[in-house]
Image 1: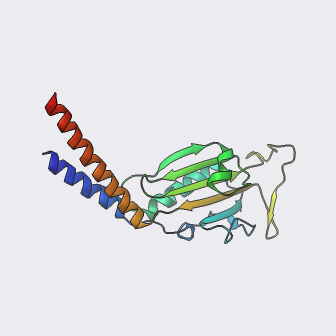
Image 2: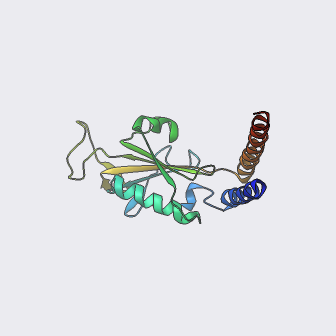
Image 3: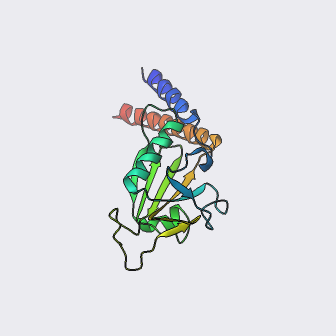
Length: 183
């Protein structure tokens, strides 16, 4: 019975890890009603980073990318949503990233999508900070900026993790049997 459960778990985990998903930030949809940033660090200077100027606020942006990410990975559940302090954007996105929120959408043992937002204005248009200014891009003014960073994982890494989990489970099971039999 234990062997059947172990083999079943191993097969299901392998299927989960091998299901294809996005390979780069270019596979994600552009933020609706926005303009793609051409600023340094938001485009080709950093791999798998994209920035968008818009008037969309946190709730819209994070829900949009959560749904976009889940539509790119054919799994029966949504990615896990994690919140981080804005200061972590320096590490997760790029150095010197301005941030008022940072969320990560992750499928465990697979890939992660970080969504960072900088909102110097409230939705009412009132300034959050004394020196808040609107963003200007392509002759238009915007209240918010969203920056995405995608961390894909290669198949060989997923298979290595899968093998590591199986070997660890097998060794733990063998050790537990030995301990129980010596009782």
